Amino acid sequence: MVNFFSVYMVSGSKISLLIGKNKKKGDYFVSLQANMKKAYIETYGCQMNVNDTEVIFSILRQAGYARTEVMEEADLVMANTCSIRDNAEQRIWGRLDVFNQLRKKRPGLMVGIVGCMAERLKDKLLDTGKVDLVAGPDAYRSLPRLLEAIGPDSPQIDVLLSRDETYADITPVRTDKNGISAFISIMRGCNNVCSYCVVPYTRGAERSRDAHSIVREACDVYRKGYKEVTLLGQNVDSYLWKSATETVNFARLLAMVAAVAPDLRVRFATSHPKDISDEVIETMAAHPNICHHIHLPVQSGSSRMLEKMRRKYDREWYLERVAKIRSVMPDCGLTTDVIAGFCSETEEDHAQTLSLMEEVGFDWAFMFAYSDRPGTLANRTMQDDVPADEKNRRLNEIIALQNRKSLERYRAMIGKEVEVLVEGPSKRDPSQLCGRASNNMMCVFPAEGRRAGSYATVTVVDSTSATLICK
Image (cartoon, rainbow, N blue to C red):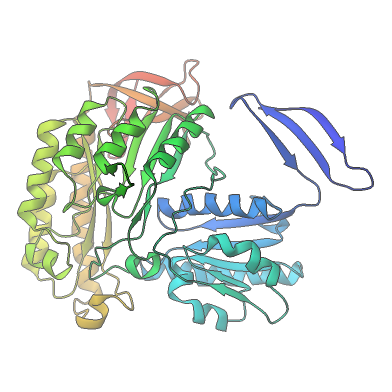
């Protein structure tokens, strides 16, 4: 709840300076209203893109733009884009048509494409004549300059990748609705160059952010009332920051953030099986506020496929990492990514994926049919030779198996007591609250006077394959 206690009018202008106090967060702020331009951003893809959008809003605010969630009132409309799969890009082409229909009603409206698709398809986007601005993931600081330079028949572009940019000194404008969970980017880029993946080409090489700036940001969001932070990176396990006097790896960073406050939950995404260390696993177990959940993408259960994907581990290594995690944290939630129908995948390769999923018993999974991405190593050197109908058949088998395993994993929680961070009302039943347990399983339970941001200890009495029903 915001209480504005002073209103000043600047003589001779329409600009109102509002000085207020946010009672929930406890901090003071100054808001320039009235004549500020408004920016609207749609975000697609991963959690990193969500955090990037928050960084963009912070940069735009300094340039005189206020954030709006109503596209029709915006002076600037942008899409923060994803290129990981073809269907993600197809959605953006459709949204561009919508943006330009709005521009016919609002002359002067500026349209921008930022993020991974901007980096990958810069020329094609500009050639449409529907875009005023194209900016890659490392070019967001240039947005005020680019916006100022936009003119009739003069679109602006900046897609230069950086080896240094981490946006460490920018305080993001948090876009989450509940004010409970915040994303903190700890590194950018990826050095793995998996044969199917466009990320190294759209986000550049790995660079890790100053560890102390990460801790300061965690302290800041905790001071503002947030109860959970998620540390983000394409491969968080390879985080490594060095100064003249110290070296901080991911395990130590986890411990540093966990030490901010005992009631600040710490999560992270995403891990790479080749890099997740015993030290990280043991650090998670040693700190009660580091959540017992790891998203560990396997992609395939076949060592032959993993080699073709350039994943730099095999089936046995992956299963050993799972065994280590469960020996140290038996209650740890495990989720994953799986690709069906990668180049030259045989029925035996597919069967090995199914058998690994059966053996591990993931709580949940992102599951996709392989999508050939232009410019990747697989696109340049391999044949996408598994027919679409066969990809879909295999994908459906993977989905069916995972649905069964998810139900088993969730049903196994019945009778157990878990601590939940309350996120807010359940979407299906506002009289119920919802929140996640440490293992990332969603719980619903009677409100009974509890509020978002509080912790509740609940007992699981029933479940679906995606939700724990609690009391």
